[in-house]
Image 1: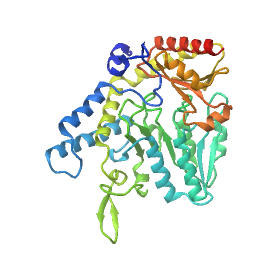
Image 2 (image 1 turned 30 degrees about the vertical axis):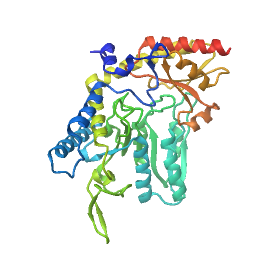
Image 3 (image 1 turned 90 degrees about the horizontal axis):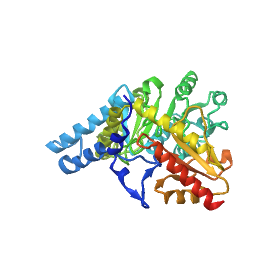
Image 4 (image 1 turned 120 degrees about the horizontal axis):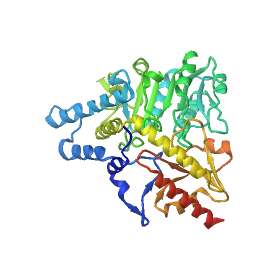
Length: 406
């Protein structure tokens, strides 16, 4: 059974509004997605009916909310097919998850002269934490290059490995252009050299579906707000045997076992890595988003978004003076483009007047922009509540931009 686009759009009340006297076409989904009623209603209900701090309370509300939060962890575990519930660590988002691994893993295993592999197509969140680790530890950052289509050069990837390689950190899907990297193959290569892999899945779980055991990922991170869930919540998945060996990142309440002025011992997984009061309502909202995706059907979503990608690629490529970046053979429905002699910011401002939300700039991917000698792009990132008709409106708006400036 295919996707019922009318039902889907009715699930997202924000899509029914008018912007600048035009129906809203929301094409900024790679930055954050809109939220379905299922997510909004469950979070509202907790605030109104059962809100209470979790784990340590013995009263009714605390017990109820604790149960919901731990059920949310179980839901997320099933969503990505992790082995154990305690391999799911709730964080504030993808950025926090990467920083947590960079600190914990780096403090334990990285020494002067060691090497860390990332790629030329990473978001800044998967560059800067490793860069800072290298500066702290006097280690070296090694970068996988990309070709002109925006695909990783895998032959060069394998050449980067040495006896000093300690970890690989690579994005599953590039936020700037939508390239889907062959992370399963890349993990197999790294494991052949005895090197663990962290995968940034912020742009993947909502489009492709993820099975961390099939990938054999050592760490996998993603954010709630990019998968139709709330902001301020994310997930760090890690294999039990690795997480057990790592020191905690943040310290405080909840993550301790016994505290004295002489010595502190730490709690078991997952609590060792969840210091303080967690964003329990956010965690429950994230789980509701995962359930919504599964109810809608990830295969249905994938097929529908593939149609949007093919239709949009054809329509945009017909516009004179428009140059698309990132034409990999395997990608999600992201269109990143520039227009001849028109700054992306100017183009985005005018497109907005037609009720169309796009993002402009370097998309936290400055090394990628430098690789192609550009300052930034206009990025239209589409998901399963977008339509062909909205793509037609984008093309008309771009044509108007061309007319105004040329």
